[in-house]
Image 1 (cartoon, rainbow, N blue to C red):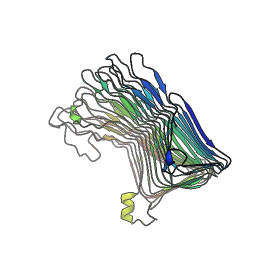
Image 2 (spheres, rainbow, N blue to C red):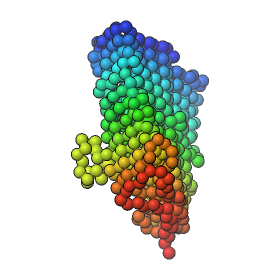
Image 3 (cartoon, rainbow, N blue to C red):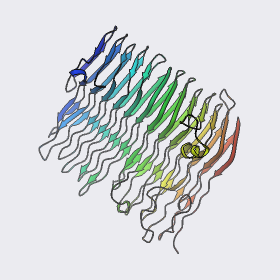
Image 4 (cartoon, rainbow, N blue to C red):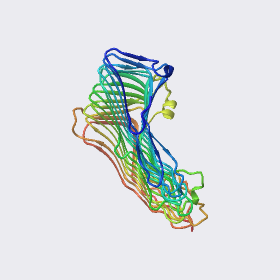
Length: 543
């Protein structure tokens, strides 16, 4: 079933109807593609609208095991040396199970692919996917949702197109049911590659997922709004910038829901390559909120809003310049709700490298974990039926909050500044069988030690950020934190965490401590060891 170029398709069953094996011998595909041709006057191509709806006791299924919904865009290539790539905008897909059942896994795609052309790539923007499971509606098997945006390539000269991710909304109520269900969303933005021009910028898309009630058992929830800058090659080629999800990836568990899931991942990272003209990699916004007496139980939870210089196949000591890199905002908060997991990681680091002729800076973002109004964060002894040994807990469990600035030495050093890492209670409780680390250090990143120390490398300056554990007043509970050990650091360490790097041949880096705080205004803190460190250590230079 196809409707091209902004066409519209609606498949709606209600009142107890059934659609089973009704398309192509059981293979169910709906296509509302937008298709364009690049050329001297590039056109705008927009995907169409698709509605798939099971209402009031109706059932939709496909014997093939998958329903494909496509409202993305395609393009034709330009044949003239003056051609410009088509601009592409993904369409809209609505998936409703409102009192009805969709018995088959769904692949929904509203990706926007900008056109390639000789004289400049077109921009590509992902569309929108809206999902509702309400009033005893049901989904069986997984939903894979793609709303990525990719910029087109410039093949001869000119700039690559910008790529911007689209949006997912997902809502379920207390009467919704899910069987063998998992949710994956990719709203990534990829800048297009440029020949003798500047690569396109990549900006991650957004998501709002609200699971409001019901007892559910899912395999995974993964939300991605990653931004990646496009590369530039040839004479005058420059690399583009990258921005993680600007409008945010938000996962909300509320309404008294009891959700069990193997893995939760929220990814708003950004990565940009070297050799741009003041380009940057800025992490986006990634948040988890559990409130309204809801409970989230997961084997692992990872939330990442870091910004970083991209890894490349070539050696990093060949980089002429490097981007500014900064973490965004990553958070996990409970307010009258509960998070229960063996592993919780909330990260908003910024990392870049040094360059031969110029270097960006690395700055941590904001990483926050909090429990308020009787909420509970419970770091337990495992996703293995609680049977982990103490050694296994140490290996597989963990509770980490990071907002580090990660720099590097080199001819032009990449200076680093820590961000803001916060753990708080306000009438809530945090119980952890694992050690808790709150880290806003400025230290050496993965691009440190790229330049030979017997060459003219200079050390980088490292300034610690702000790391705090705050047991605040307010909230409806007394508040408590219990953990084997608590480490709060905001160090400035230009010679690495353990002083592991040899002396540079040029100027040594300056280390300056930041602010590390433990403040108990309300509640009880119970722990074995407490480490609070805002030390600054200077780097080493050869005599």
